[in-house]
Image (tube, rainbow, N blue to C red; front, side, top):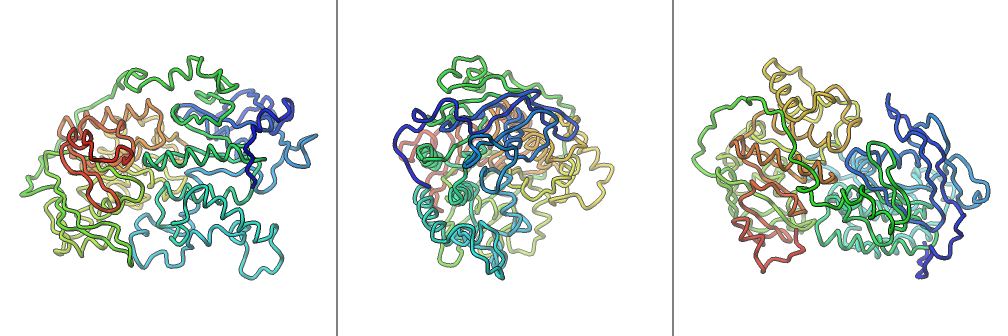
Length: 545
């Protein structure tokens, strides 16, 4: 992996192809997409694929990786020794992809359930990052193999040192992979990919789940990758502000069709990209929801706040993740929790959701219940709904959307009990409210990211919870889907249906209903109070969220 500061694009022959896509049509289940699509990636070019959530970006990337069948057309690769005539197959490591699916595969090998990261006895056999970034791990070597590595370990080590320095992840080398945040795991997977020196590196929504500072640092690192000799980048995104300067060309997709393609400088002139760059409120009309009369249960009046923390601290070994957190959430408030990656947001949520055993070592009340007073964790969970993209990691691909919604009654990942008639009625109501009838019998893995998020929202709401915890609900979604979710939450909060605790790295992706904000920084409270006072404070680092 060798860096070159000269302009590689101007030196590349105009007609030297890297990948050619000729008249392809892709089959996904019983659907055909991208009918008779043509596309050519030349040597020295870096492409971005931009389109709304569910537009087909990942499907097209799957086709390049030979992960989906073609019903017509062909894809030719002109890598290394085959540059002259090309070939129709891939060799290991030629195209590598960093995506949510890759993160899911990594976690599923080492964490059987989503609470494992909070259990001190779990993950003892999980590797640390430095073990993942070795030639032995990359080549999936058995401890009993004695044949040499395909590449010398010294070469892998050199590439690792370069990648780790570029991405600024030296501090992660001793950390277990199940303890990585989404943003940290993404950087580690990019480093692992760079160690293999691919011809094409596909970055699928690389900035989702990152705080402002981390997004800026990753942008700088990817811009540096554009100068690496022999490396080509394909970046997939639904946000126009993530189109990087180093991208030479763009391909715009909508409804599994290519709407425009060409040099990056020419694409902003099109109506398509103008619609992607317009503000969400002006680009998309307010969604129309089919709101039936939702059953309203009388709310029991709490004697005190929904959440009350006094000097709450969490330690793992010598590392203090939360330090003396004092915080109260009252029953007439909706809160946002902000902070950089690693600030302690996920740990804070784990205490509230009943997933972290260190709750018993702290002075903590949830919904008026003192933790450690003999309460049942399931009685607590029954009153709390939870949405997080992380849940998608642990659901089996064949689980239907209807089963996912019904699993919310039991706070399980998967449905292991037959729902009662009342539960089926409640599930049907929320499926109707969120417009999910069309996909109710489809596998969760077969629907778009926006539809998956709506299914998880229905799962969180189906049991009529008192408190709903929303962890990055708009992560990776286009402007239209973000507006849809935020409008729905505002409408439900306006009805007094529940209280929300909302976590995000994008302050602009926050419901209007949020009245108060808690800001964490390095495990400590950096700001706490009324929304407009906290977000308008000059004492807070503007890059913090």
